[in-house]
Amino acid sequence: MIFSEDSEQAAVFLRKAVPKMIQHKIVPNPFNYTLWYAYFSMNFPELNRELDYMLDRFGTCPGSMSEKLFLKYVIGSDEDVESRKLLFQQAVAGIVDSLSESIDVTAKQSRDFSKALNDDIESLSSSAESTEVSSLLSNLSENANGLCRINEAFQGEMSKAQLEIQSLRQQLEESKEQANTDALTGLNNRRVFESLYLEFTNKEQQYDIALIMMDIDKFKIFNDTHGHVMGDQVLKVVGRLLKVECTEPVVAVRFGGEEFAILCPGLNASSAGKIAENLRVKLSRITLSNKRTGEKLPPVTASFGVSVTQGAELLHHLVERADKALYAAKESGRNRVQIFS
Image (cartoon, rainbow, N blue to C red; front, side):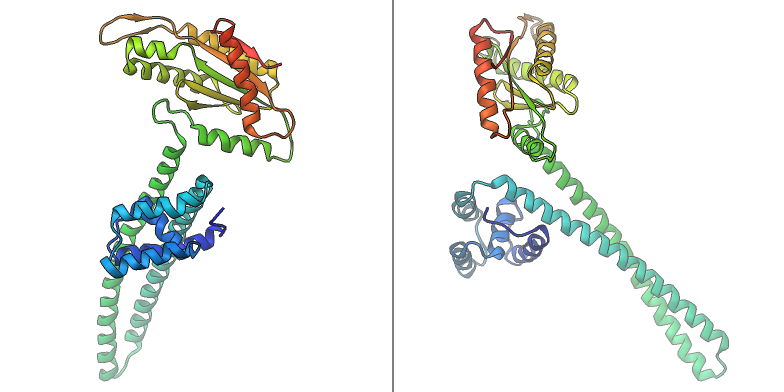
């Protein structure tokens, strides 16, 4: 892992990166955020030299060069991209929360000071005896009123800033969700599948985790016959079925292409097999048709392979056994459930 700093230190780097990008008119896209974060982390001396050269020569860093440097130094030297992305998100979220809290505190203190100042002036005015003192208090009151007006304007600007902060926080949440979601089916993607497995296996209380690998039968032939648009519709139908039938703690994800994975923490092979059989039956009973032509489509079926963890093991071993069971199900005629033994 190249970036080993905690979220607090990461936030410091990000605070330095943003003004630098603004100063040199660098577009704030993901490449550049990451690139200038890396610059201030001082983890890539050669990258820093190249960026300094770009700024000296052009006064900025052209977009095409930013992408090349990003791929060369950041992606090219570290495979742990997801951990790094999470660190960036945590850093930005920390900045947003800190800024929002600071605005709330500043706004309250400003209101309190303005009110206290006006109250003090009113008290002095009521007890003033000389004309000279009254004149000074009048001037002070006028200046205080001016300060209050400025404060009110400032409050308005801070309210706008808070709205922007809330919008940024929402965008961060949405980007996180998009990064974890398969756009076509709405299911979680393989990234979530891998992180959930680690989460389950890292818990103090160890328990079995069953895995169901599901593959739509003859999907390539279906695509070739009915077109990719209808193929996408089939994937969406499968996604909806899995969302309805796979409730916590069971989690369904799109593994890739026409293949899906279902993690079943705490379940044995028999229980996971029942879930797979339920999905197999319900999918085969769904009737499909081409809405444009009215043509009825052949039933869609799927084959399933089930495996269970054998102690603490790497995920790919569990997947490998489930894939073997899935292959056996297809070899036995498809549209069936096979448990690895």
